[in-house]
Image (tube, rainbow, N blue to C red; front, side, top):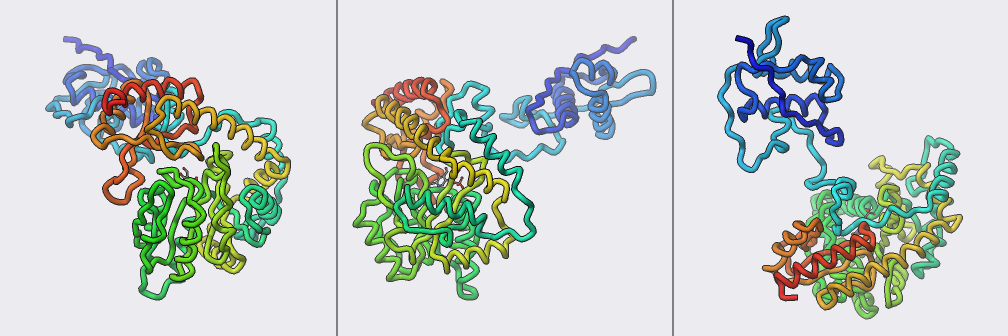
Length: 480
Ligand SMILES: Cc1ncc(COP(=O)(O)O)c(C=O)c1O
């Protein structure tokens, strides 16, 4: 009796990083173990299946070979490829066909535990996760000019670990103008961003600690989770330092910290701007204890209603290291930031950097220098300040009284009763709006409950819709 020719239920996804062969063998394995393909059924020839799926024949022959080797398929030359006798395997709970697609083949490890921003955009999800700027309206001509300029950058076999002198001078000038600090190129080291800068500070404090001693690093609580991760990865013991709606509380700082990480311009995530008297007390504490204050100056460029305070660094350059970045003002993919410090400290950081063979790409620095020199960065900042102010106004209009931390930056905090947080996130997700709670900002159990809403990567139309969805969800689960 001729055996039935199967039509394998296979769908390949070219945007999936899993190789097509592994996707195909996984899908067939899944179909066989679930019973969708039964013992004795004949699979299409490799040529036919390749044509049906629009892949090369090698993809199919390799997948068949793998399944022969695993004993799922049997074949006699010339008579076709058949599914062998086997016990259907129980499907692991919660695992749908997509999850099981690669079956027992090694799954490609994904870096993210959720879809990328691009995938979210394509699926029509409004993404309100914090941490991303608007990257869809850049001045293309300015960028092209910058990259053409970078192409002329000569190769170097001995790059300065502090970065290109020209860019350091331009950054110093930018910071003098925008952050009220008196600095020159001797105070600037060009990093790949805040994370890179903090990592170098962590490496330096670790290297300079007494033998056998462990660096105790204070981090705001709640605070920037990556700061904890980076310092801990450099061997520091993380000491949570409480904040309130104005920012860090110097009176609560322990006396034995080597370093404290803080966000005085716009506390992450509560959004406070550290008042001047507290700045003075923080610095007095640092002078007394000998601790180094790491000022993450992110978001200082985007400020609404109230004027920015000059950077903490300007009040006591001996005790403060300032970290800045273009990740939020221009493009996180560029990988440019800076450390500002006194020359001696900067020198120690540069030495550690050279030891670690860490650097910022010369051509990327050259492109950035042109963007600063020609005023492109300033123009972009002016445009984005206006745009973000409008988005922020939209959020306040819809979600008003529960919103905090909205005087700067690209995110706000929406406070909620603890029990309402999960239902509001779920209700929003059901209507295609992605938000996250405060859990990633806490070292221990969250003390502040609500949502950290980022509005950097949602345009005004989608943001308005998202705000309406959130307002309804909050009304339903937290009583408005
Ligand atoms: C508190 C804080 N600091 C710094 C950054 C930027 O970090 P990087 O320059 O490493 O991209 C972010 C980005 O979300 C942030 O939230």
